[in-house]
Image (cartoon, rainbow, N blue to C red; front, side, top):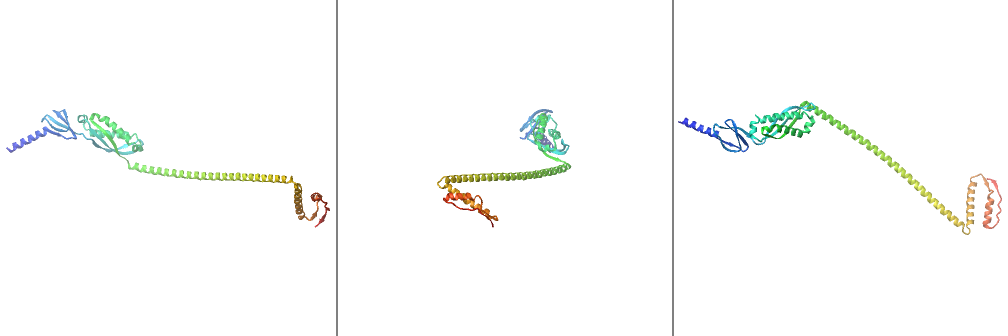
Length: 308
């Protein structure tokens, strides 16, 4: 009796389990009737026909992140690197995802790896780091075209790590060290060149300033001499004019003659003092005549020559 009751309960439980199905908000369920596609169940409570309907597939409808395993890739400059990434996909059509392909996740991973190898093989090592966005967009485009029959949408792809081999890293470090040393040498050479240019420019400017100063000095001296000559000439002209005006005054000619005689006598005295002979020059008669004319009387002078 107990055994029959237990069997009945188990049978009822099994029938309920096969009949009632609850689909959560994040899922879609594919129902097959007698082995053929019947319908897609969206979130909610459903009753199935026991032994006729079957919940064949259940799909996650949220965005999924698939980790692409690291793989060895050869760049266009023959450098081996390890590349891995992340693929973001979402099931858009549960029926296609069930019947369009056996395992869309595995297919997406393999297609992403194949496309990534092909794209990175076209780039140099430096370009793989600088053109990640280009590689990402290319992989997205290729997978998206292939995944359309699967009912899967590729949202984005991101290269996570690009890791060269240890030998390549050591080579790159040496190359970078050499490049840094080269840039340092160029910087030092440029600085030395700038220094020499600045020194030569300074010397040039100094020489120009000296020549300009010398030129200005000579100009100023010439202008000073010209001004001095002009002033002397003006003064001489004025003095001669004054002398001429004075001569034309009454007694002017007599004063001029007296002045000339005075200068003559002074000069004659200087000559006599510097010689060993006392001389009364023959021209003294001229002086005599001038004195007589000025004083209005006769002066008796005898020429005399005597030894000192």
